[in-house]
Length: 224
Figure 1 (cartoon, rainbow, N blue to C red):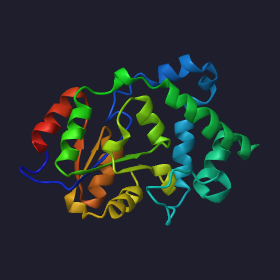
Figure 2 (figure 1 turned 135 degrees about the horizontal axis):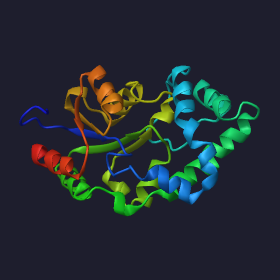
Figure 3 (figure 1 turned 180 degrees about the vertical axis):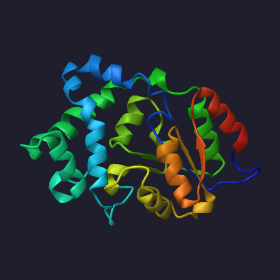
């Protein structure tokens, strides 16, 4: 439950499952590129292994749209090992040049939650600063594919850029600092209690979970 009549200066949104219904993503992946069937089942496990063995990047910027090379940070080194032990360069190429473009192309605008864009537009007009923090990269490309206006958001950032994934609060802390607000003035919105919710609780930041389109109506009513 959100506090009554609280005014937030910034809202940080997750992307997948929060701004759109992501339940059909994996099926769309496989229909788009059947070869993914041999990789998708182990990709999330590989990412989590990399996250556990990695450390935060202390100098990332939320305005930076690049991913460090596998050779430049333990997270990407571990991910490369998990995906392709014999050839990190090949794993790096697959991840950025094959996986992510296919991920983007698999997305469909009709999956976007109704009223979501209307809500974002209203809050931005009210002076609330909006940002996206996703575990996955290529956020601008994914928003464009979903036909969600990128200019609604002040910051787009992936946890991968920070070197550690959710629920580690590091990327959130750095993004809040980047935006220039206090944590007490921030609301985090996501679809996962064990990811965004856990990070929010670790920081003492308010959290609202999105389950469905009806939750967007509820959030709009609470903040209006």
